[in-house]
Image 1: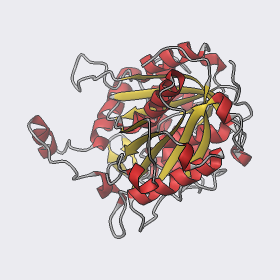
Image 2: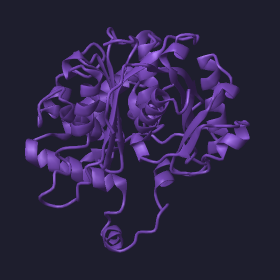
Image 3: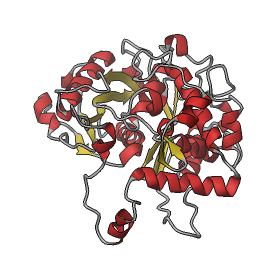
Image 4: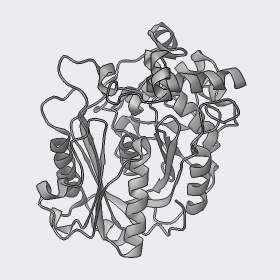
Length: 390
């Protein structure tokens, strides 16, 4: 998905529920709350909404029937969208195109999930939801049946090819925990050290516990509308300058680029081209971080560092508060909250509005937002800015 945009579309509202180990509300309950908050934040009413894009998480329970519960009528566009962790960027991209084409004027994009339950471990929330079939059954029988093991395989391949180390991955976890200390919504704010990372238990070699993201209940919604309408909102508009997606579909076998190149390479280049900027002009990178390795490979593929140098880049301290590149300024999914692609998108909105408080990055003229789905299978990129023109 690529094309041209004149930053005539902006995000005008952001709604975030309480997130984390929040029990009781269903995914639909969370979605309703997030949308109500986003609409109020945008200074509009539900009656102004004529588009609804819904992204359900793994627990399900929320889809386009949400419109009926909200009392939305005469919608001009409505659908349930599923591109896994890349869905938030994909939704904003489609909403932007719809508004530019005159198909809709005010579109709400929402993600909601409630996989956690009392007395149930976080690790069990994303396991056992699908019975392995065919060759997948053989992999599961061999102990290779979870997303953890697939990402571990990707990380191992990168390590064997480029010499990336576990300690370098740990630098990403430590840096993001440093940013989380300034985020009152972050689930994990206690400082961690490189030694803490190495001492955390192995989940799937080489991934330690502190290489893996949190699991959270909650919802986040954004309101996307024309730049002119957004100019009347209570908060500064967050202009959409570029968007793209890529789905490389690498097989997990010899000869493919699995673990070496992700969809960020294509979608990042396309989004930058649409925005008319270069990677050197990006001030903040809000990177999808289901694992520390996802951050590393995405930074490489976007061009913040050369291929194979992501580990050294992270170990240099560049990603931590005060470093040369502001990355995952709210703590990301490793330390703040796991709302799929809405985690990096929500923090990008906060940073664009200069609402980050003690964690506000020193510069925010151009913000890059990534989404990642599957096991490096799907990718989305957004280029956002508080300025209407680049």
